[in-house]
Length: 491
Image (cartoon, rainbow, N blue to C red):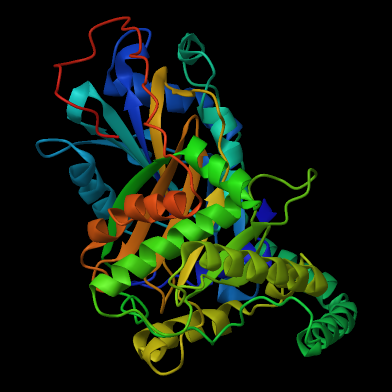
């Protein structure tokens, strides 16, 4: 039995019928490399063979009576792999848009809290004989960094390593604690937690003082501030409907821009997002005179931290979308991001998760549902305009159940009042970009996704670079016929 941290539990309390708090990914796979050819059963057997290594896949929640404290994780005594892994067929012609439509349907359904909080759908019938795996895991179980760590257990460097040679390993068993035990453990935990409140109050006061001093310094660098964002079409109360769009750009071009402009890869990513959104808003006659404000999740995970909990903080930065010149825009983003990092350091990396420990379940749940149910996101200025996450991936090929991963599009959750999340994942020679939106607020997500390429061209031209052609991909050697051939890749 393991109690959720305050930050883990906060992602549970934030969830409402229209605000789903799972993180997702759409992987496009080439089954040609599967040692025994493609079959749905082979993928299911492969995942079952690895489940014993991945705690979030086999644990479920148990709530404390009267919500006296945060829920606890226990090993699910009734774990059923068939419930978590399902298959679907993509509508013709099985391209990116059809795959995005299916991923959106999956993302629109919340996870069942009576079972381990994850699910996977194998999507068959994509172009060129490819398949996809759309996975989702509740944010209370993983963050971006720990989600990347799960890849270590689900991906191999050689397709032959995926061969399952025996029955699934026996999973750990655990007795479900009774109500008396849960209440007793909750009271003990609360007493220990309260003992640290004085020190946290003192540290918070010192942190606020440091930030105020920095903001008063006319020469100091500062980040963007919450509740200063202009209102744009996707800022408003969310519905339960999601939509998904994908984009892909060459990693080499991003690195060339980094070198030419003397900035970081993250600065280029933010500038690319800024150019994309500026173009989208201009086409919709909705570009504000004030800059968009983005929240960028930041991992504060130490080497000793367990993979199953959230260790994350956030930076508020400007996307400088009011500036016409893309280089000036990138310079402004770089300056604001540096200021946001300095303010983040002044506050302290663990301040968010430390205060989250004192979140009262009943109060937090009620506040979340009232805020959502009363459409309060329309009452005040947006806290921020969007979420932008940048997760670095490996520069070498990975194999899932023996199938080569061709593309991996991450899909982070939208927040109440903010119906847009852009998550970026670098893999091999590409940067894969996933757009998760509230469909009622952004009914044309593919228009937004298609603005990525011209936004990149704008940066390349302004930097005086020649954009290289996309790298040619060597066809995978087929070990066994994987299904009917189709025309083109879904990636």
